[in-house]
Length: 69
Image (cartoon, rainbow, N blue to C red):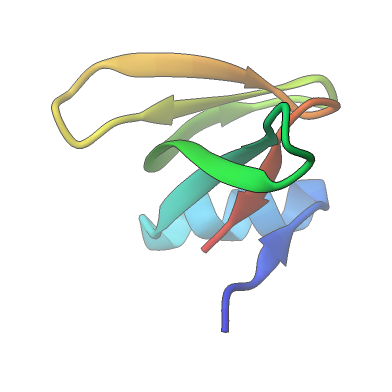
């Protein structure tokens, strides 16, 4: 079962453990869909930066995105 990451300590633990985190956002149909995945590179109270499988880096807003691992 996926675990939802919400607290700064949980992002810190995921970054240290180098766990792949999935980014999910609500679509027009009201359902969550996966928009990205990767390793936590940086996090703040407002944003999370994930390094994708292909090496690209994407910044996600914590208010618009749900994170799971």
